[in-house]
Length: 337
Image 1 (cartoon, rainbow, N blue to C red):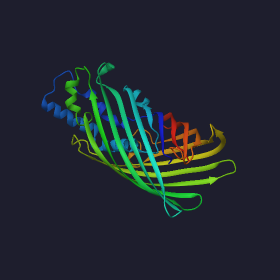
Image 2 (spheres, rainbow, N blue to C red):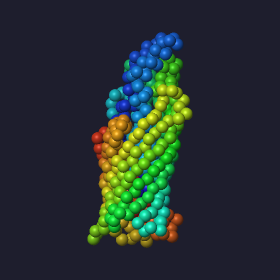
Image 3 (cartoon, one colour):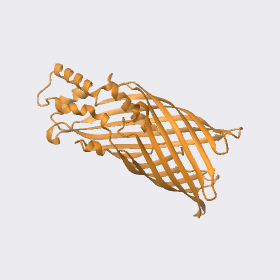
Image 4 (tube, one colour):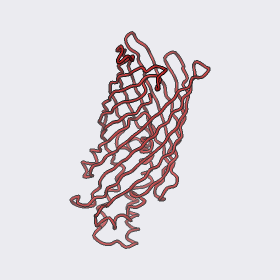
């Protein structure tokens, strides 16, 4: 896909993260818990939350944070808010970079790419009836992913793009019980299982992409397709209950049509239509609360010339995002075709 930085707004459901919230009301927080009672309550949390199952959710979160072909976003989690959870948001900032090298073989070129990603999931979970006491919590993921690959021109219209990537990420959770009298009682019950933990993780993956190009009388057509898979493996976990040994995969398609408009401010200018689709597949499918979404947008593309500080073209535009449990928009600022 075309390297680009985007700022977006989306909505979706993310219920699998918070099965443990169901247990909050099961602890009698008005009484001081003995050490034995705390251990029993922690076992009950493990049984309800299932930390082993949570690993694939955390892996999907890290994979989503470093995907160069998924838009940077600000998600409002309406599905969770309908269940009584307060102000659930997922904020995602991503900077993808890409550079291409020509080789002696005219049919073959190489590229390197990298993604710097940050993700913050925050919400308020009620601790009892009425919602007067809440725990404010957030899961934060930061990652760097670096890859390299080849562009092999099969025909005048088709190009194959295999690549490999490695990266490292940090995922942590923090919980703030505020002034709630339930905080000192519930913190030791959830600490290291649901809340208040951190881990690092290695990322190793591969992708296979294909690009189709075809000129027409009045416009150019460009289609990019890719399938990527990342294996996430945690290390330096702060708690033995936080273990990630899972794989998350994504399918992506984007179709562009490029229409010449003449010149603007002395720069050759084109109108670009964007139609895209993204699908999460494999074990991670559905773990982030949605399976797929589509994108539809328009952009202006300006040719800067080879002697500029940013040789090539720059693209500025906007996209609408629609799909089951997902809606929103994004601004596109990035390298063009």
